[in-house]
Image 1 (cartoon, rainbow, N blue to C red):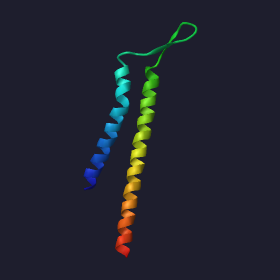
Image 2: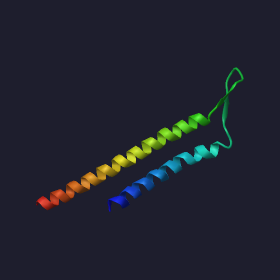
Image 3: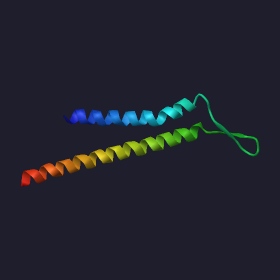
Image 4: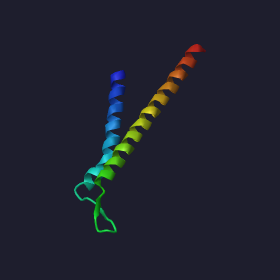
Length: 84
């Protein structure tokens, strides 16, 4: 049973990562550039990768913490029921 739960959490994490990184990967084919005042261009792709990695890490962490909180509350309820 624990294996199934672990696989489910892994699948959810991968799904969230794919959803957050898909726009970044799609924009790699059409790079956006900003033109500075001096005429040089700034490539925005590394910025999008950074946003995707940080955002994905935050989303995965929050999903994990939420899952652990849910499991802890569920375990506490079952222990309270068995004590009564």
